Image (cartoon, rainbow, N blue to C red):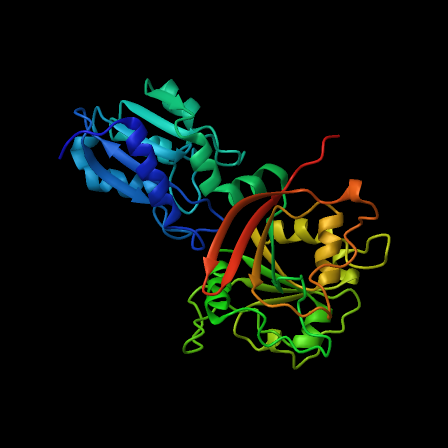
Length: 353
C-alpha cells in the first residue's frame, strides 16, 4: 500500500468518526489512523458506541508492532483519564508511537490533557490539522461540552408559504414520505427529541426513531421530552407508550421563567446533566419561538413542501421579533432535494454584543 500524507490521513479519520454519529453519546465521535514509519496506513478505527473501545485502541490493535515509531492521526485529543476504558494517551505511549497529530483539542476537563502527557513522554504532538472539518463533524458534542447545555436543532415541516397545517387543522401530510424518512434518520443522530404539550395534545406524536416502511423501531431511541409547564400530558399519550424513555418536564420540577412556563435554559442544563449532548426540537410554534427568542437554537433544519395553503397555522410564533431590525438572521449552509421537497439547513447568525 502506498504511503499517505498526514493531511490525507486526517481526512480519512474525519470520515471514520462520522460512522459513530448517534451511537457514542455522551461520548464524542472520534476517528483515528495509524501510519507506520514509511507513512503506510497500518490501522484505522472509530469510536462505535459508548463504553466500547476508543478509536485509538481499535487502530492500535490493527497496527500491532507496526505502530512503533509511527504516527497516530486522530480527530480529537486522546483522552487522559480512566473511565469505562483506559487512557488512550498511555496506550499510544506504550505502543511506541513517535508522533500524534490531533485535529481538535478536548474541551472536557475530565478527559483532556492527553497532548501534555504525550509530550512529556517524548512524543511529538501536532495540533490543528483539518481542525475545521473535525470540529464540524463533532459540533454537537464539542458545543455541549464547552458551554454546558445541548446543541439544539429546530426541525420543522412547512408548505412553501410557511404553513404547518391547513386552516381546518389537517396536516397529514405536509411533506413527502421521503422527507419524513429523512426526519427519522435525523432523530437517530440525537439524544433527545423535544415537543411542547400543545403538540402532544393536538397531534399525539410518538417522537420515536423508526422505519416508516414497516414501523420497526431503531435500536437506539432518543429520550422523549415533553415541555409541559403545568403537567397536562395525558396518561394515555403515545409518548408514554414505553417504546422509548420519556420525561415530562414541568415548571415545578425544572423551574419557571418570568412567564411562569418551564425555564428553557434550566431545561437544557438538566438535559446536559442527563447526558444529552444533541437535542432535536420538533413540536410547537410557541415553543420554537420561545427557544429562538432566548437564543438557544444552534441549527435549523426545515423541510419545505411544494404546496401553497394561503391560510392556517404557521411554523413559528412569537420569537421576540417586533421590527425588521430584530429579525433572526440565518446563514443557509445546505439546500438538498428530498423527494419532491427541499431540506434547508441554516445557522442563526450570532449577534454582536
